[in-house]
Image (cartoon, rainbow, N blue to C red; front, side):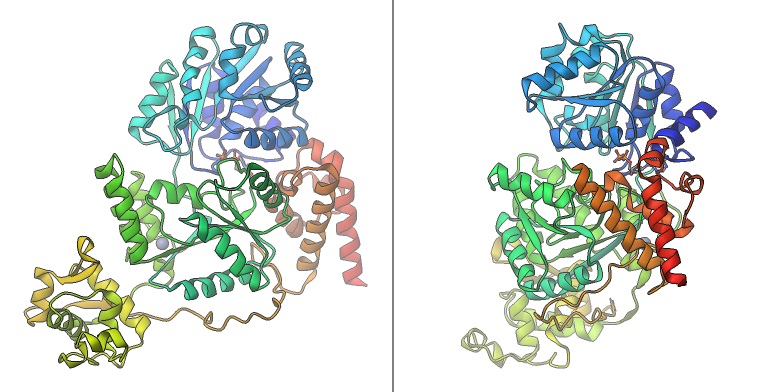
Length: 610
Ligand code: ADP
Ligand code: ZN
């Protein structure tokens, strides 16, 4: 165990294991099959990388995406670990070189694409001294999972051909059926199953509902300006939204690129590269974006519209904060999203399951208790405390007697013969004189104008609550008109009273100037004394990291994670000895970068003194 800790520091620069890592590593070293379920960012890689370094021979790592392989190989090499990739995208000559190095036993980890396993099973693989086989993104093997890949089903031959080699399968998403599928298809023998908590406490959770497109854009701009200089992803439901939104943001001086599966591969690749290498901070993307991205310093994720299930949502927000540092997430949700998603679910071939999944998602969005508790309970975990890092925890709902408000709304619905949708209802309540309303004679009903005192936005919010509380129902089959439910009638006739949650307008995002962006300093991840040495130092260290990254043609986060930079700001190492104590500084990084980083730190400190 002590030896493993020494290796952890030497090669990865960490001084302790995360929960379950040590147990998993020990099991793999005992040559036993293992299934690992950990959330994105949980630290799965070390579970097979460390045993691979420790054991003689070469470890095979099956990984579904070439981009992901490249990233992993680069980070291993940056830590002084001999690693390589083998896939069909590489020139033949390079493939031969890699194979030769492997046969000579000079490679500790070989990343290989699943389709290659079969073609190499007869000649190349048997010539290797295979220490272990890791199957990354193992849920791809299952039809039940959401990323099924036919090539993965061929992996069953691994156990047949190499019965003595331990297999470790890893995934961030696997319900019970998928789990069973993975074990059966890979033919794992009495596997140890390790399930770590799915909690990601570093991700803040916020949900906002009922915003118009314009309001959403204003909110997004406000949000991004608070995160200037930090990388983030905005997930959109439609391809068109991605391009439109990127343009809209551009007109406010925010550089954003669009990404969706309909773009030519060259553009997609460029978008991905620009994002990974910090040449662009914001990507507006469909869910096609992200699978191949291991960027550890994505600091925020926004959902422009609601995802169809909690699994998808969790995977998407999971792309933020993989380095474990504080990151923010924001989800917009509206009835129109819900209507579209419901239709998708109904038309899909697993409609019952998909409708149930959507209902869970909706429950999450409408939750009045800690959102993280809802998420965790979805994944079958219980938590005994509120998280303090979601919008519900930060702004606990304040209630008032909303009976009169509800009565006004319900009576207006009744008097129109339950023939209106939400926007018309609000216009009636607020006494609008728009043409359609007058034509239909709704200005003559008794409740016309009865809710003048409340702005449109507030009515919208309270009506959402009435729907959520089950007083109003949406008739999806009938132009989304509103119907009064039996429990609504009880309120309408005064047989029962009801509480609503007080609606508070969120902060100052109403005015969004198109004038050139005021450069707000990137908000430090941990509180750092503003305008102080710390901020100057962090800035300088970031620039140095970027320079080195550009020179070495690797992403900045592979040189050092944001977490390592923050640790440098905190400890201000000026000698190599001090530098070696920084989180994420292993032996190679100490040798390669220690001098320049400590020199820069000395320089900044001296300049501040002088
Ligand atoms: P996953 O594959 O589960 O999504 P990774 O293996 O990429 O996660 O790890 C996520 C981040 O956590 C990486 O930046 C990694 O270096 C870091 N990490 C992993 N294990 C440890 C540890 N024991 N101590 C500190 N950081 C760790
Ligand atoms: Zn909470």
